[in-house]
Amino acid sequence: MILHVLPGDAIVEKFEAGGLEGEVAVCREALVDGDLSGDTLPAFWETRAESLATDDVDYHEKVVREFNKLTALQSGSEINLWFEYELFCQTNMWFCIDLISNTTADVYRIAPITLSEDEIWDGFANLEADDLRTCFDSRVKLSAQDMELGSNLWSAYKAGDMAELERLSHSDSQAFPMLREVCVAALERESRPRAVVSEIVNEGKSEFGDVFREFKARAGVYGYGDTQVKKIWQDLVGV
Image 1 (tube, helix red, strand yellow):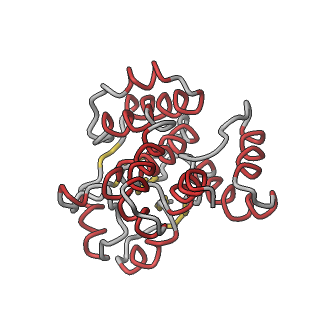
Image 2 (cartoon, rainbow, N blue to C red):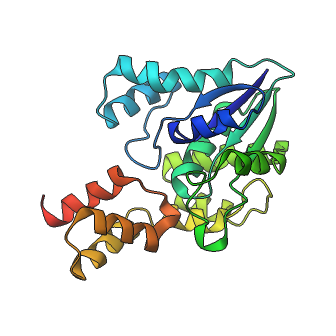
């Protein structure tokens, strides 16, 4: 079986238009945000449902069921991880790799390699079906060392072990481009996004749409959506 793990619902239609063989699992989490506690996987799922303020049944139906597709694969299967460069996507990918750390399937990483340097944090969103096929054709197979690195990155991130995350950020792997930049962003996650939003607001931008666009321009490495940025903005301006 071939399974493609897509970073969100937004690219499903374009992906399907590309005609690539295999089934699809959609990652509908945002592990860059919220509580990550839970010593067991069931406890972690419960924490995430509460953190996202969603009904537990809905969370399992819409989110957990998609992740379960990864762990159900047998030997001889193939898993293609379609994840972007920024922290939002990377934390989700690290989690996926940890989830399948003992898999016997072949695991590949597909990145949005067709992006120009000034679009690097934009991800797959603006790519067309042909672009996605080009990205797929340049996929990188994860070695045992890559799988271990991904799992260790998730463990350090989940535990808030900044020293270990800093150490791992210097790892060299084709499967983890932009790793240093992303880990630095993770290390500064509690301070930099708020500082950037505060700076933008202090410059006179009061409408959230303007703030969000400027945040993406200045701190695109975080990959934050409007949910994450709005939370910071509302806290700052008291909305």
